[in-house]
Amino acid sequence: MRYLFFLFIILQASISLAQTDSIQTIRCDADTIRSYSLLLPKNYQKQQKYPVIFLFDPAARGKMVVGLYRKAATEYGFILIASNNSRNGPMGESLNAATAMFTDAFKKYSIDERQVYLAGFSGGARVATTIGLQSGGITGIIACSAGFSEPIPKAKLPWTLAAIAGNQDFNYVELQQVVQTLQSSGSVSALQMFAGPHRWPPVDVFMSALLWSLLQHQKQSNEDKIVQYRALIDGLIGQNISVATKANLYRQYLSIKQDADYAEKLKALETSAGYRDELAQEKQLMIKENACQQKIAEAFQQIITANTTAIKTKGWWKNELASLNKMLLSHLPADSNYVARQKAFIIANAAESFGNYYSAKRYDTAAELLTVSEVFEPENPLVYYRHALLVAADKDESGTLYYLKQAISHNFSKQPLRTEPAFGFLRDNKKFQSLVY
Image 1: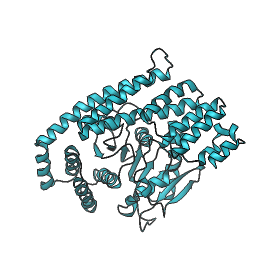
Image 2 (image 1 turned 30 degrees about the vertical axis):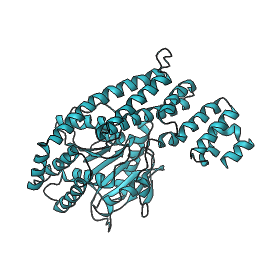
Image 3 (image 1 turned 30 degrees about the horizontal axis):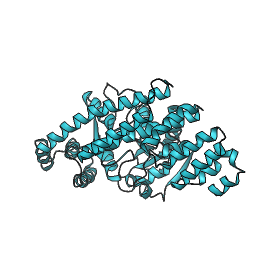
Image 4 (image 1 turned 90 degrees about the vertical axis):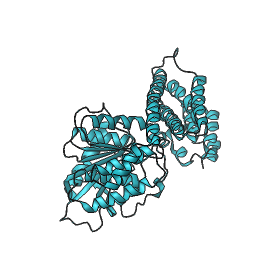
């Protein structure tokens, strides 16, 4: 059930395209409960040392993420390894899974210990940065859609950080602040944006961040990779992206190799009115976004602390939604992206918190959180499913059947309903059987 709660914020766009053939599942010799997905470079030889990238997915979908970024192995010569156990939840469990994976992988494969990279998405990114702060021997980290689990480090980091976020990602501002803080302390870091929500980034975006990370440590000795990196940057700049994103891509390449053409194009961008206007608008929206998210976080805190005199009404949440929708009337892409980020922030917090408090049997709190979801995603089948869970806690047969029927009519899969323990009291109910089979 925990997977279902989290599923809604892991948007699956393009992930279904991941190729998973040739990917091995390897069990850790010293801890057979743990495993990882593995893809070796073409013509892999034990006698040769290879760079490695360890990947952390928030739902432990190791095979999926290795398949998604298989190009790192097939074209760029990396060993790809992704945990099948690290997932959102207690950090200690993910760190234990990572330790078992590292121990096993370094024993079995020809890894160049000078080229050890980590990457993660969302909660997996926080696992990766936590490992980086607690361990030595990390060369670089690619943090997708999230930063640190603790305050942003003020001291210079011994590894590079490539941050990636979609322009509709609710952690968009967080990653901007992460990179600004790290750069001010002298850490080597960069931010890359793409058009999209909270998700693993597109393959070309991820590969450009990976090669940027690699080349920060091999500027003078890897001309082939520089050529590959230039091809990726050219492809990304040719897409319909913002002026500021183009400028960042030029800067990232120029941090590796001087190029008169890129330098001239960057200068032209930086002196353009469009660039200045975009930065000014971005700055204003960041201030507004921080204030909005702080207000929303306080509203959620009032629900969680069961402060009945301060809990926001359903009408208050409807007004928040109306205010956001009003911004869409400007028809400006920046406003549309801002609205998408705030809605995603609210939806994610409501759903994740519902899962936590439902599991803790704090059903009144879970019900208040579900009210928020009703306002912001009324047609989501998971909202009906969560309603069914709540009424099932009271063994309300008719109520449970009603919400299950609504969930199914909104395309919720019948399969998990058959085995969900919360609906065990309905197993012999003929209406339930006809509904879920």
